[in-house]
Image (tube, rainbow, N blue to C red):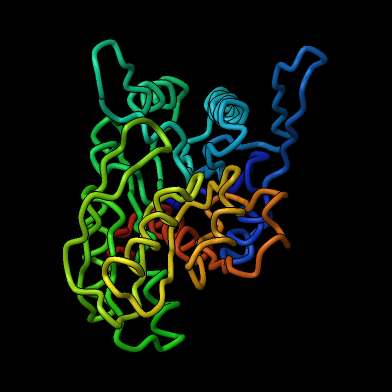
Length: 316
């Protein structure tokens, strides 16, 4: 039996990333159109046959989150009803991932709800990058390939040749990610102990580890309002005696006042990926932000899934 043909489609969330992936694969983006009715309902037109095809849809569920999520769900449903053999959602940023557990009574677990909806729509497989919590993979009853952003970030820092560097986790929950980056850079590990009183508000309590006179790389999965990362950088300079501070993340959400905070902070440079597009109010407004592309790792994942090869090599 021959391998079904691979087809790549995109929603409106991050078309530039989708086109980079298509270039990496050496194929064209599938012919589709997403529009809205006058009342805001989303309409999807798939303008070519996908019957029996191995279909991949590039659509991170970034802002506007609900719009992009609904686009993805309707595209999946359209592909399923058009008899696609397999439908894989390439969700480079998984919205609602920060609502992965109950913090208090009567809280929803929205990350699980989104997993249920994707599966019900007809998704056969998900490729995600740097989920806020690895346990979200278990919310799905379909295969999930969880790709880390750390290898790309480490490659950049090796290329600029930082000397005497250590890696800092901005909170206890990110220690695994920070340790992975530290191992790749042969550096030490520093942990910032913080207390979060409410969403987007945190207080630095303690700093664990030695950052005296060192270049410190703070790593996180998401930088949203940049309060945590800038507070942590200030504490590392003032309390721990760090020489200079770099910051990096996979997902540059960067909602206001993130850019103002970064510009006014002690952080020398912020490295992000293009898992989601930079907001228009970010582009050209700061020289501190550098971007690396996730297209090669996502493109390689698509090839390996399509050819039924192991994806775990991409974790190395």
